[in-house]
Amino acid sequence: MEQIFEAHHDSFIISTDPARLDMNAIYDFLSRAYWAKGRPRERTQDAVKNSLVFGLYQGKRQIGIARVVTDYSIVAYLCDVFIDEEYRGHGLGKWLVQSILEHPDLKHIRRWLLATDDAHGLYQQFDFEPLAEPEKWMQRLRPFPGE
View 1 (cartoon, rainbow, N blue to C red):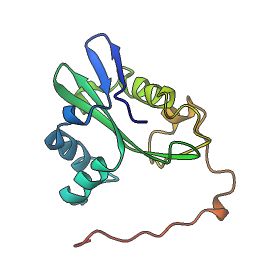
View 2 (tube, one colour; view 1 turned 120 degrees about the vertical axis):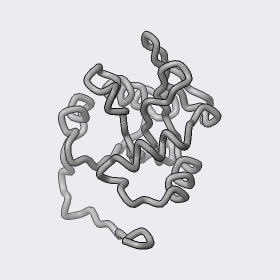
View 3 (tube, rainbow, N blue to C red; view 1 turned 180 degrees about the horizontal axis):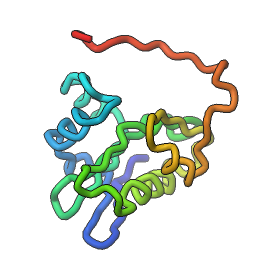
View 4 (tube, rainbow, N blue to C red; view 1 turned 90 degrees about the vertical axis):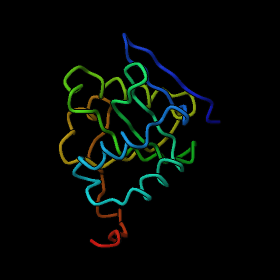
């Protein structure tokens, strides 16, 4: 598993090649995201290292990211989806999600999960819906140091 995946559209590239990732750009993106505010840089680096990461690029410049945490068989958690503000509104987020769901190692996943405050319309286009039985789901949430 985990062969490098690439998709191309106009001057944009989506790639899972870890060597292309720009950790400074990723940390900058996520420091502006409501869900990752206060996340220590080391935690972001560890998360990236331990996930299947889809980078979105225009040329060599990284302009977006999405991470997938998965067992490649039953469940996948889509997280840290972010498109640089300068590039929003051009369908790149939709293309990124579509590319992730069509990835050869992920297209047979039974259960996809994600959390969002404001992008329900995007994910509903790909058959994401609210949890059918949220009362069955539980979480254990621990603050980052200093929170």
